Amino acid sequence: MEKICKHHGLTEHAQHKDGSIRCRRCLVDAVRKRRRNLKLLAVEYKGGECCKCGYNKCVDALEFHHLDETQKEFGIGNGNTKSWEKIKKEIDKCILVCSNCHKEIHSKLVGSNNG
Image (cartoon, rainbow, N blue to C red):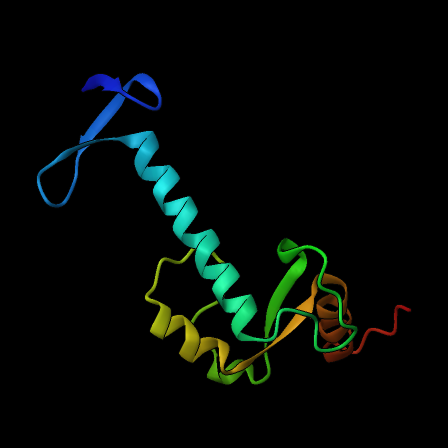
Protein backbone atom coordinates (compact mmCIF):
# COMPACT_ATOMS: atom_id res chain seq x y z
CA MET A 1 0.00 0.00 0.00
CA GLU A 2 1.19 3.50 -0.73
CA LYS A 3 1.27 6.08 2.03
CA ILE A 4 3.11 9.31 2.78
CA CYS A 5 6.47 8.94 4.55
CA LYS A 6 7.90 12.07 6.19
CA HIS A 7 11.32 11.20 4.73
CA HIS A 8 10.46 9.77 1.31
CA GLY A 9 7.07 11.22 0.41
CA LEU A 10 4.50 9.01 -1.28
CA THR A 11 5.99 5.54 -1.24
CA GLU A 12 5.23 1.87 -0.66
CA HIS A 13 4.63 0.78 2.95
CA ALA A 14 4.59 -2.68 4.45
CA GLN A 15 3.49 -4.29 7.68
CA HIS A 16 6.41 -4.83 10.05
CA LYS A 17 6.82 -7.90 12.31
CA ASP A 18 5.31 -6.04 15.26
CA GLY A 19 2.20 -5.17 13.24
CA SER A 20 3.12 -1.55 12.57
CA ILE A 21 3.09 -0.11 9.06
CA ARG A 22 6.47 1.24 7.90
CA CYS A 23 7.88 2.79 4.78
CA ARG A 24 9.83 0.17 2.83
CA ARG A 25 12.57 2.67 1.99
CA CYS A 26 12.95 3.59 5.67
CA LEU A 27 13.32 -0.12 6.49
CA VAL A 28 16.06 -0.48 3.85
CA ASP A 29 17.79 2.64 5.19
CA ALA A 30 17.69 1.25 8.74
CA VAL A 31 19.26 -2.06 7.68
CA ARG A 32 21.93 -0.24 5.68
CA LYS A 33 22.77 1.96 8.69
CA ARG A 34 22.94 -1.05 11.04
CA ARG A 35 25.28 -2.93 8.70
CA ARG A 36 27.52 0.14 8.38
CA ASN A 37 27.66 0.57 12.16
CA LEU A 38 28.50 -3.11 12.65
CA LYS A 39 31.33 -2.81 10.10
CA LEU A 40 32.73 0.25 11.88
CA LEU A 41 32.51 -1.53 15.22
CA ALA A 42 34.19 -4.66 13.80
CA VAL A 43 37.02 -2.67 12.20
CA GLU A 44 37.61 -0.79 15.46
CA TYR A 45 37.53 -4.09 17.41
CA LYS A 46 40.28 -5.52 15.16
CA GLY A 47 42.55 -2.49 15.51
CA GLY A 48 41.33 -0.16 12.78
CA GLU A 49 44.06 -0.86 10.23
CA CYS A 50 45.48 -3.53 7.96
CA CYS A 51 47.64 -5.83 10.07
CA LYS A 52 49.98 -6.32 7.09
CA CYS A 53 50.66 -2.78 5.79
CA GLY A 54 48.91 -0.45 8.25
CA TYR A 55 46.42 0.99 5.73
CA ASN A 56 43.59 2.84 7.52
CA LYS A 57 42.31 5.56 5.17
CA CYS A 58 39.00 4.05 4.03
CA VAL A 59 37.00 1.61 6.12
CA ASP A 60 35.36 0.26 2.94
CA ALA A 61 38.78 -0.99 1.81
CA LEU A 62 39.30 -3.02 5.01
CA GLU A 63 38.27 -6.68 4.99
CA PHE A 64 38.30 -9.69 7.28
CA HIS A 65 40.37 -12.72 6.31
CA HIS A 66 39.64 -16.04 8.00
CA LEU A 67 42.90 -17.63 9.10
CA ASP A 68 41.39 -21.12 8.91
CA GLU A 69 38.69 -21.50 6.25
CA THR A 70 37.49 -24.73 7.89
CA GLN A 71 36.44 -22.73 10.98
CA LYS A 72 34.47 -20.16 8.96
CA GLU A 73 30.78 -20.12 9.90
CA PHE A 74 29.83 -17.07 7.82
CA GLY A 75 31.43 -14.29 5.86
CA ILE A 76 31.88 -10.89 7.44
CA GLY A 77 30.42 -7.98 5.53
CA ASN A 78 28.33 -10.11 3.21
CA GLY A 79 25.18 -8.25 4.11
CA ASN A 80 24.44 -10.29 7.20
CA THR A 81 22.47 -8.79 10.06
CA LYS A 82 23.64 -11.05 12.85
CA SER A 83 24.08 -9.88 16.44
CA TRP A 84 27.28 -8.11 17.46
CA GLU A 85 28.18 -11.07 19.72
CA LYS A 86 27.97 -13.54 16.81
CA ILE A 87 29.95 -11.20 14.56
CA LYS A 88 32.61 -10.67 17.24
CA LYS A 89 32.95 -14.44 17.71
CA GLU A 90 33.47 -14.83 13.94
CA ILE A 91 35.96 -11.97 13.55
CA ASP A 92 38.02 -13.45 16.37
CA LYS A 93 38.90 -16.08 13.73
CA CYS A 94 40.06 -13.36 11.31
CA ILE A 95 42.72 -10.79 10.65
CA LEU A 96 41.90 -7.31 9.40
CA VAL A 97 43.56 -6.53 6.08
CA CYS A 98 43.15 -3.99 3.30
CA SER A 99 41.68 -5.24 0.05
CA ASN A 100 45.10 -5.25 -1.66
CA CYS A 101 46.76 -7.34 1.05
CA HIS A 102 43.71 -9.62 1.12
CA LYS A 103 44.07 -10.32 -2.58
CA GLU A 104 47.80 -10.99 -2.13
CA ILE A 105 47.05 -13.45 0.69
CA HIS A 106 44.57 -15.33 -1.49
CA SER A 107 46.94 -15.33 -4.46
CA LYS A 108 49.59 -17.02 -2.35
CA LEU A 109 47.04 -19.54 -1.05
CA VAL A 110 46.22 -20.65 -4.56
CA GLY A 111 49.86 -20.71 -5.65
CA SER A 112 49.80 -17.63 -7.88
CA ASN A 113 52.98 -15.54 -7.97
CA ASN A 114 51.54 -12.39 -9.58
CA GLY A 115 53.62 -9.59 -8.16
